[in-house]
Image 1 (cartoon, helix red, strand yellow):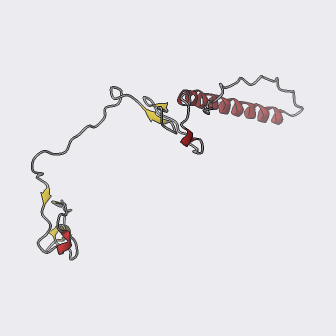
Image 2 (image 1 turned 90 degrees about the vertical axis):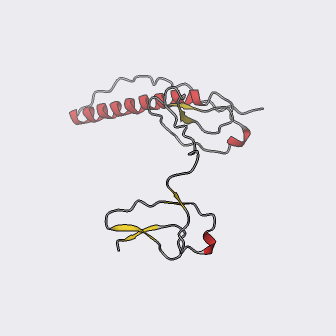
Image 3 (image 1 turned 120 degrees about the vertical axis):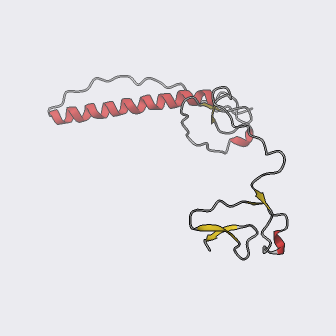
Length: 154
């Protein structure tokens, strides 16, 4: 017996005609409340409809005690839950949103530097990079650090 979490289709709320009030202020307040209620209902229906698509796949047993965040996806992303996932995510295929598939530099890194000569002996194997210092600062050593740092200009 596998549990399948599905959201029900949004149901239309029957329209009830407003009763005439003896006061014009009460009628406008009731009308404003009705418009607010309709707006909330429309928003809920859209959220529920997108969540139905995300919940169509049976939940793995480990997910039954997990509460997922209520997320909204901005276009072109869509709410989707893949098989094996507990919670839905915002997703789009690679041809819709380009994915940065950069790779590591090959060869020597032009920005890599050896640890500073005055660095502690515990810095063996540290990866250091050339600092880019703001105006008034120059590359230098700070006692106890492995790599060159920006220090006030000398």
